[in-house]
Image 1: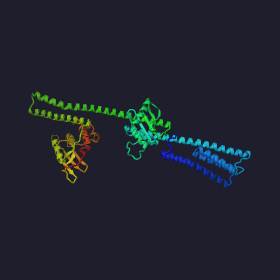
Image 2: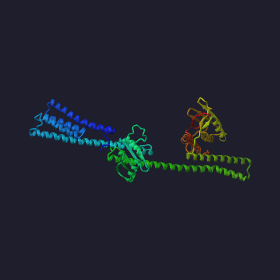
Image 3: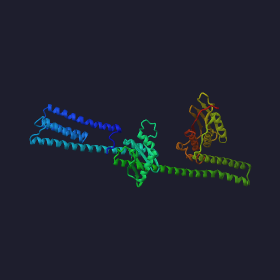
Image 4: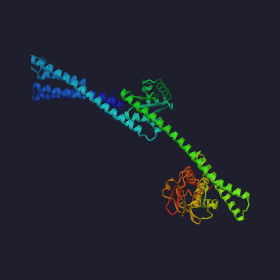
Length: 516
């Protein structure tokens, strides 16, 4: 069966019938013109027979056997009337003339049949080549599809596009869903009445395809003119594919069904593997979090317990030693509180519990408040604040963002700067606003960040190769910072060079409103 003889549906079929009706008058006219030319040239019977035979072969090759038989009969009549003695008469005298006439008619019929068979075989070979090309294109599009989950939804559209069908339906058993190549919006002008009926009968068609899939019917005619084919992978039915019109040969339809079944099974396998890998990653992250917190919490607890035990015992301790032990308890308690706070922030982020609540904020006042709240960390450093504004209202005009979330971002960045820079170093806080948001910068002149560490410093529990031995961080602060900014719709970058400090630059989008 021919796959598609036309790409335009009813218009193509009308064109084929019109072409067939034009072929007959054209062949007749050409035969008559050649007869006139042969008469003018006074051609003999042998030459005329060869010319007529060429015409019959030509139209047998181009138009088919029916027209070639018609031309053979017409050519025999013209050949007898104009070129066999006696001319201008249909009478045939003598054995030689009868034999010539019979040989001519037989040759026309045989050659016409041979040409028709060659034409049919050529058409079938061309059709098989097109089928293979279309099947290959379909397999490539399904195999190279970037989103495995979306592939199942796109299969009907891919099949319809590659094989020039009117509509394709796909029922997937595991999902119990019906996917269609037909747009669901009935407002599209190109949606015809039959297609609208398909859209309105989607639930009915889903039930029909579900039954066909469960019944394992290999090939069935469904309602609305659809032809259905069961999709089997191994010994399991994965769904049903239906299409209209019935222009696909059984071999092509079977090949399409096999490819679609493989694609669906592959997509489901990738989706299951992705979910499994996500679950494993979550388990690994949870284990790493517990292990890291266990280790980090034990360190300050051990120091606190040792100092407290020594203070409780109290024998032989002078005031200086007591003050030093009390300082250890205070510092390690603060560190322990910070670790617990970071663990709670990580838990909040992992549970998608971050909510953004914008409020009007004066940037300069906000930065001063941030520095004041972080004073215990920054007491040994020189801190400066710089605010730039490009809007006509000036830098003191309030802007809207989540004061609490951005304050937490600054707390982590300032703690990071105070921890990794020497005492007495400079820390600069800058802010610059424009029409779309506010850019904040935290800059220090410390030893900087190693180039190998830069791509990884925002990952959880990563603390840098050369700082693990001296720094007392958990490796979660910068990861929390990036997560908070992402929740706010912002982003963060870092620039650093050896012995030239580090610059953290983050941008916060905001909506400007009046102070009222």
